[in-house]
Length: 311
Ligand code: ACO
Image (cartoon, rainbow, N blue to C red; front, side, top):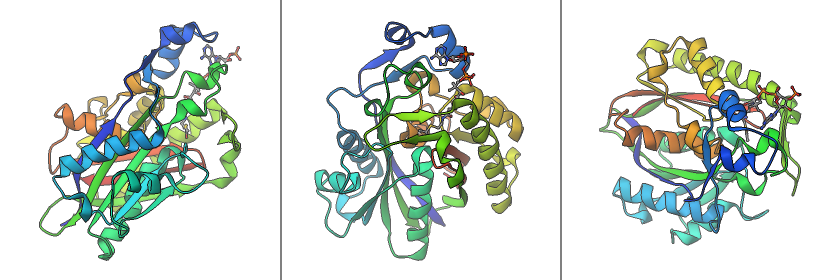
């Protein structure tokens, strides 16, 4: 009995930006981007706002869960590209979904780890008995904060949204078994954005922090759940770079067939990356009810963490 992902939905903009398109925009090549990152293409929002994308993903998650949207008691939205300075993007989503005022709504700013932070907060509310149904969203319009003249960052990111409806179900074997989340504020200068500025990143430093941080957090989360890496059916890592994901799998001694990858198609969609990957893994039949999943992410903050979930 426990916290169960009852429904999931995603939204990806239609417009595809390929590495070949980027070759015409900055001094880069398909070969460089593919070998260094594994990314081949990404989606770029045209007319869609971050709220539009979050709303579409949420509507699909609510439909997939088969619930009445009036049952939602909280909206937790993770983003590093909010629509406004304030109010929270979650408030704008709450309005568009026409949720009742009892659905308290707020954003969390934890960059690429935002979805895992959101899931952990939802789990705490559900397990405390204060809420029964929570909507957790990761939504990003990273194209709006990218310097399209900076080849070291513009090739990496994409837009999109993913949402899950989570509920407490005492008759279900599904649960969040453990969640280990961390922050190292002292490392913020390697990945940040000034107000109204562009995303800045020291790629090599972030790369090392990502591999080590996600591996250590995963081992801690496994230990806390009384499990070992061998028990995991599928790893859903934050999709930032194929090489990071490969190095992580090696550190955890998890065979690569047990690691889900779609960074080639969407690039890094920050807080949206894990729910989008989870959705696609489900759609491809790689996850069934009862499977043990390891979700892990690292992002600006620095923030990172791992969550073990019995789906
Ligand atoms: N095309 C061609 N050359 C490039 C490009 C490009 N798009 N970008 C950089 N280069 C050049 C550099 O200028 C450098 O040239 P030099 O050797 O002449 O100085 C060379 O390629 C190597 O650059 P590095 O930055 O050292 O390349 P690296 O192998 O480290 O790969 C990358 C860079 C892909 C950014 C990698 O470091 C990485 O993935 N880092 C982690 C990013 C990440 O995980 N972010 C997650 C969090 S994001 C968030 O929270 C929002």
